[in-house]
Amino acid sequence: MNRIEGKLVLLGGGKMGRALIKGVLSAGVTTESQLTVVEPHAGAQQWWRDELPGVSVTGDGQAAIEAAQIVLVAVKPNVVQQVAGSFSGSWGERLVISIAAGVTLERLQNLFDSRCVVRVMPNTPCLVGAGASAYACGEAVSSEQAATVAAIFSAVGVVDQVDEQLLDAVTGLSGSGPAYVFVIIEALADGGVAAGLPRPLAMQLATQTVLGAAQLLQETGEHPAALKDAVASPGGTTIAGLSVLEQNGLRSAMIEAVKAATERSRALGSHA
Ligand SMILES: NC(=O)C1=CN([C@@H]2O[C@H](COP(=O)(O)OP(=O)(O)OC[C@H]3O[C@@H](n4cnc5c(N)ncnc54)[C@H](O)[C@@H]3O)[C@@H](O)[C@H]2O)C=CC1
Ligand SMILES: O=C(O)[C@@H]1CCC=N1
Image (tube, rainbow, N blue to C red; front, side, top):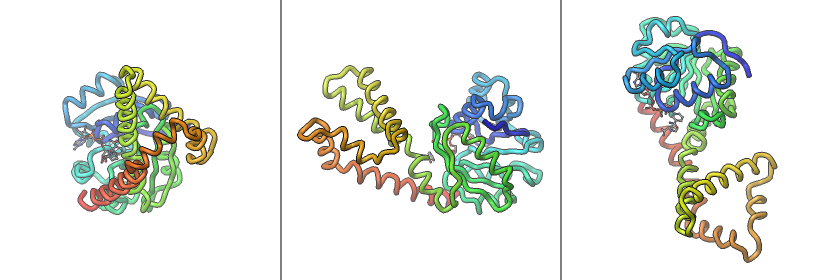
């Protein structure tokens, strides 16, 4: 795993900032002493002091940003403008990496008055090293800086560089997707409970079934339809279940969910 050089500042120590930094630290891509977290809320600051006492935490990022080579922006989309304006120096050649949903490279370039900006869409499984991320680079991002982005996000999962126009769809699929899968797991477990299983056993079976199916798909490289067909015996249990999923529009619900989240990402970008 590539170690990154230089000081890194995280702007926004909330859910995603925590997931990314914990993952990156445990992969050894950076160290606690290279890191400063800028976070205004006392409760969130306390989390960092309790969980990662070697990381500096501050409410005022001026000095830390001055000393940093890399700035990771993990605030809500409507706060990006505020954090960009809160630094009184020039953002200059610093690498600014934003994970804010919908906030475009053009918008980032304007807000940070810099062409060294990268727009990334990660997801929460980064916390356990199983994230899925994609990124697009601004006009002046060097190949070394792009490699730094790849090093950070490959430390916490898989990462691809894409054309920026694809990032709203990435947001709708893999950025928001963990939530869809959690709903599926919860619903599978509810079904198990309805069919008479104790809740803890139902949760374990539902979770492991989703994990195992994903792993089987990934490791065999088979088409999902072929793997689905292999489960469904003629006149058996699975085809009875699949038939109910089709009657209730599961596929179409999934497609519409990704499309709706993609549209929402586009809308967030136009309002951020
Ligand atoms: N939650 C998710 O699954 C994903 C979120 N994202 C993006 O990540 C960004 C952060 O999302 P979450 O971590 O879920 O939100 P969050 O609300 O958990 O974290 C945001 C943090 O920013 C802090 N903050 C507010 N104003 C600030 C300021 N002026 N300076 C520094 N920090 C400030 C807040 O106190 C909070 O701790 C969003 O832009 C979101 O679109 C991207 C991928 C997945
Ligand atoms: O719901 C959101 O806006 C963020 C972006 C992707 C996942 N969560």
